[in-house]
Length: 292
Image 1 (cartoon, helix red, strand yellow):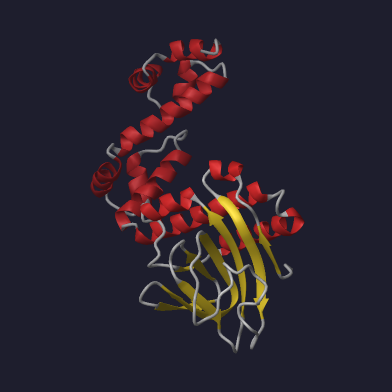
Image 2 (cartoon, one colour; image 1 turned 135 degrees about the vertical axis):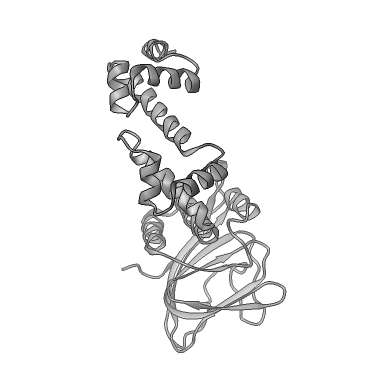
């Protein structure tokens, strides 16, 4: 069980090079009828309810237990915060929050200066207008790692903490994309996963459409609209990439690889390989064996 702690860290050139520097983290269990926030943080992080606060970095807060209230923006927009929520704070955005005095809450956080978060904000993957978000077991698992590293030796583990900040960003971005994706987009993504997993099997795109519960004509149309290529072309390209791996790392013949990857013949594999890679399988095998 994580004990209450907080950690503040300096800027780090190594971490900034990959777009995220963790500068604080913590875990606090706020008991019912307690003073909030506890008076122990630096002046630029402490706040009272009347004044609120503006940070100069991103902060991801995971509320594991209890509930409370979050208010943000120039108009003081309010949102309830339930157990299992993520509260995402943005640099330069006024905010204030507090647990329900009758219940308290358990808060976990990491704060990052991050060009990666900046990019995600510009791309619309995270949005100050949607600062209270649902979490998942994945978020809790990441915070467990954060607390373990921070309590063990926070400064020495700052690079690892920073990469966990990026992992939280990936979860937040993925969550937003899935929530906003149209049904056709989700269908195509599921199809791409199936084709990638089974490209070494004798699977057909007609089989995939049937498995996804849609007509082949509809599947063929939306796949091309979303990806710019047909599902059959996509499957061929997956198989050719797998063929490159096999040719580069084994002594299998073109005929053997053709049979392994579901091509009708060695000639069919060779012609598609030439088209997509720009050389014949034999030439490719020669180049990779020579280290070219």
